[in-house]
Length: 140
Image (cartoon, rainbow, N blue to C red):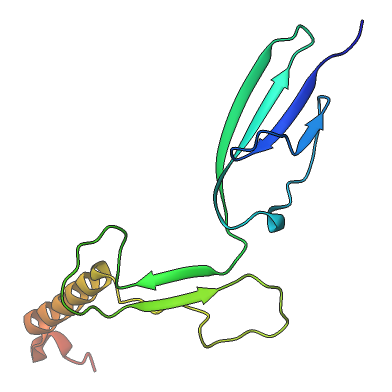
């Protein structure tokens, strides 16, 4: 009996497969040869009986530096002048660590401010309620 099983792998909307295998198969997808952005991998498998199955897997390639933007969100409505901070950092394997530009500056979250205010408020309450000389008498 002849084995007619075959797997064809397509990238995006290409009509010609970039790879054909007989199952089972393991292969390495080299994303350095694919431009950054959204793509899809389409896998067409044919069984020995001639039936086809199709699976499409969307994915996003980001080999370039990660870009972080503070001050403008996706689909945000803006007016007047807005300050924007942009940072780009990659994952190149260097022996030298560059401190400047390694982190994107962000504001302190509101929950941290609420926690600090609650702590300071409790400390003031404690000092006001229990700051009297009779609580601090010496036993000697």
